[in-house]
Length: 320
Image 1 (tube, rainbow, N blue to C red):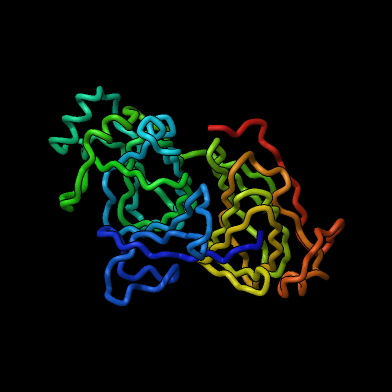
Image 2 (cartoon, rainbow, N blue to C red):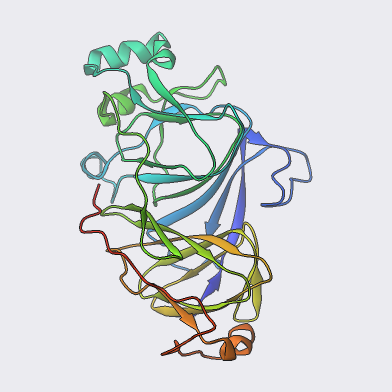
């Protein structure tokens, strides 16, 4: 299956921003963009099992919850919605909420939604660029203002709002009470350095999320043996004659991605399904640089003295 340069679809949200540059262009009518959804181009494309997004916030999002797999299947859905956030940009006072201050019974949770006291019961945490937060399905959560967040999630559009700051949108009290797991939630996850280039951010049964930090003017081979998403955060790279920059993304499955990093270091996120890949990234010989840029097939170099070497440290266990 060929590598696909995906379509970034801007989604208007009341809590979004009028000018999301450099990630995407503003709307012509000035309406606020809250999300970019990265999707496979073409109406005939089979939807991927994961959904990649960028979120831009000028106001807090609603306090909400997504169903986990068990609850989703109990109401006839194929899966729930576990998601992970990578904080790309954050103002000094930026924060996110995860979980409640203490456990609540279903009747207590319902009452707190109906009288809006839920707004004072969620636990807010300050965040900074580079932080990673895992939000399992069933966890009550919210995102504050002043953030750019990259989100990877199970593909699902089910969101149950508990509180919405007076925006006059519907709340979903019955479903929220049924889906929520109340109580204290684990906050930031601990990342694991796998090599000089690879940092494992999240690994769970639904997806793996890694950050790649690659030096300028180098060539690499990425093994996309299963559904794989790549999102550029900074720098540029040439993939089969097409350049991607900050906010650019590609999708691949059952394929190999060979690419050349531009004049500046490249930082990107890679998300894929299945177990943590032991051989995800390989350096390519500098002599193959033109091939990476032109789209010719490249072969991982047996010895590449001019390219950075990957020495990986493997975690004994990385399941959450």
